[in-house]
Image 1: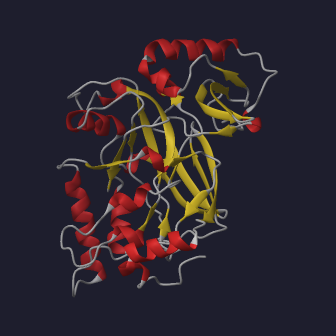
Image 2: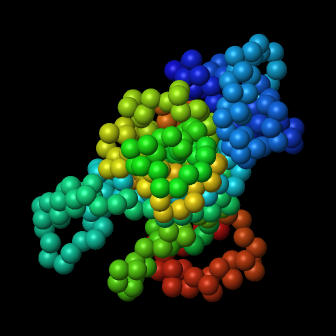
Image 3: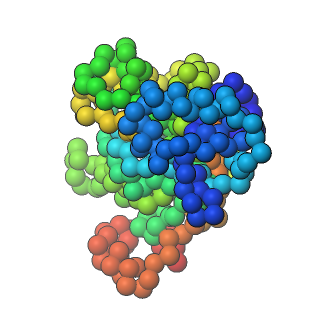
Length: 344
C-alpha cells in the first residue's frame, strides 16, 4: 500500500482546496494530483459512467509536476449527500455494548446471562432486517479538519465506518445485487455524544440519533476510490486515539454486508447518486475502553485499507455568553447531570 493509503494500481478522487479555491482532482498512489474538469463531485455522480471514464483517463495520463496531496486540504468528497446509516451491524460491537458496557442491562441479570442474551440476539439479527437511520450532510468535515466538541455532554465518541457512494438511482434492487448501485467507497467517522443520545424515562423511545449530526461530527474522505480497486474481503477498519488502537476489524464481522445494505436501502428510500450508505461500526468505541471519551486536545487517526486515512484534532466549540446561556436553557436536564463541568 502506498504512502497515501491508495492502492498502487488504482486511484482516488475527491474535492480539495488550495489557496482558497476548491476543485475536483484525481489522486494517484504517490500523491500526485490531477485536476478534473468537473465543477464538483455532484457533477461526477450525476453521470457516473461517463465521469468514471474521464477520471480513469486522467489517472492513466498523469505525468506529475503539479500539486500533490500534501499541498492541499481535503474537503468532504461528496458535497451534500443523504446519509443512510446502518446500526448494530457488527456482531462484536453489539455484544460488547451489551456485555461489557452494560447497555440494555436487565435488573438482577448476571454477567453470564447478559453475555448469552447478547450472543443470542446477534444470532437472530441475520433473520431480520437491517436497522438504518438517516443523517444530515451539514455534519460533514474533511479528513484533516478540526472536530468541534460542543459543551452539551462530555461523552463524545467515535465510530469509524466504511461508506459506499451511490452511483445511480434504482428502486427495489436485489440485496444480492446492491453492489451494482455502488460507484466507490470512502471513509466516514460516525461520531456521536452519548449524553444526548440516551433519553431516560422514555421506554422504547430511548435513543435519539440527532446527537450524531452535530457540526464536524462526520469526518469524511479524503478520497472516493472506485469500487474496482477495493477488495472488501481484505479491507480493515482501524482507528487510533492519541496513538492507541481503539478499533481494528475486518468486514467479516458485519451482519449485513454492503451489497445487502444498499439493496435494502433501495427499497426503503430513493437513493440518489452521491448518497452515502454507512456500514455501521465495529467493536471498540469509547464506552468499551473504560469511558475514554474524546476531549479537546485528542487526535483521532483513522485508516481503511485502500481508502487512505484521516487525522482529526479535537477542539472545544467556542460559544458566546449568549449562545452558552441559550444552550444551557434548552438542554437543562442534560446540563444539570453532566459528570464533569461543561468545557469552557
